[in-house]
Image (cartoon, rainbow, N blue to C red; front, top):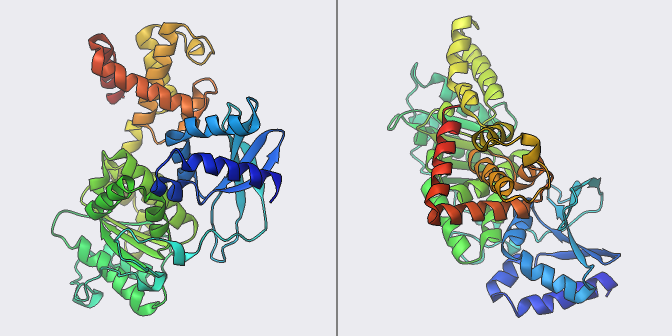
Length: 421
């Protein structure tokens, strides 16, 4: 064994004594030691989500063990290695130190990497011995394109769906969002896409799942410490169809997992199909301007209509209204500083004055709550703080609002100001 392997092996021995067996298997067995340099141990983890979970739930244990093994100057760095191609090779590594240093620039690598393969991935549907080819697609045979009646109201959606079915992952409609009221055939069209793909490409793994089932599976995975298996299962899919995504609204942890899976599938060229009874203008997380342009072109070509100013306004109105309501980190900081009569430079400084620290923590809290920014990005905007500081700030704010009536009034006032932006 190399020196870094010996050190990590000793760390694992201590970790086993301090976490549950399932927690150890899920969060520590997949880790690989990479190198040891000047009392800095680098470990390799399979995803950004994996890294953030370790930092949020096990950081104190890891710090204690690293210092025991390497002394008070000992530090831990993460190498985030994500599978991003069909042949299993690894295109890049991101190194993130546990100290306040910023993330090291992406380092290209060329060596192939085996992250476990499909045989070892557990199935969140609790079917033992899952193999990728055995996944039940949950598709109903009678929900086919042949049984879908076409009319003026659904011609565009049906044409886009059929284009996806002929070339999954290879059209402008990826992801494809099917939007419409209750009972108008969204589920039928979504399933028809999956059925047609299975008929044309028998080797592709297609999965249809209702969002409520996805939510319950994720909750069970968290309870059973199977989050990593849950994530890897969904990342295996060639085509993922999620029905009624509007039910993910307000479920922050589930949304984080969904976008983690979404990003992986999208980056690897897999097809994503979503349905919703809420318009894109009411939903966060979409590339709105690009979606509006694609929708405009599709509407024009598939319905054989010229692109006019009225048609453009009609399409854009469905997508870009939401941008006026988006709140940026800079705007949140300005509102908070105006409310407490503080210069914004002071908020971003290193001062530990009580009133400044409180305002800074409130700004971090609203940035996490009201934007899609990562914890690291929020910390960078608040004077170069790390993600652990942001997490601590959010916990502090949550605790204070439950016990301090005046503090809760601050939050209510600020939320109203931010909501009318």
